[in-house]
Image 1 (cartoon, helix red, strand yellow):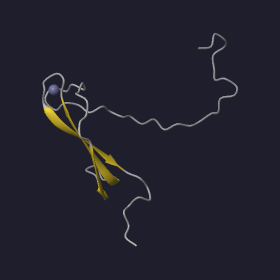
Image 2: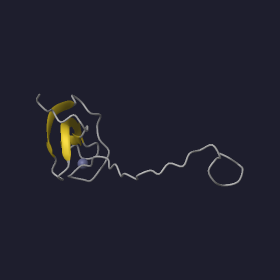
Image 3: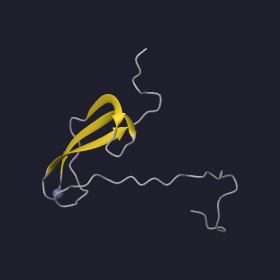
Image 4: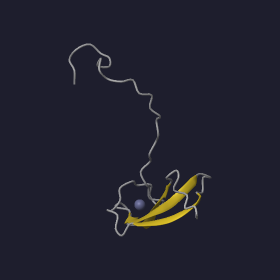
Amino acid sequence: MSAGKAGRPRAAKSIERDLVDVPPSRCRACNSTRRADYEHVQIIEGAGTDPQGRPYTAVELRPTRCLDCDQARMDRTWIYVPGDIGETD
Ligand SMILES: [Zn+2]
């Protein structure tokens, strides 16, 4: 923390950042975001379109459990790597 005048340090570059919200996974039963550690994470390769219409090239499945109500669930993340569309040549 600088005790000097406010503002960005001279050497810092001005980077225009996109602001992206990354919500934690959440229990459907009680809304808690507290969960047990993931076990046996799976990554399934395969290209397609996710439920929100965005392209994906793999799906990550992470079994967990709510720490507040003990509901088991699968956390699912749609991964997209441009150029990794699984083209056959
Ligand atoms: Zn819960």
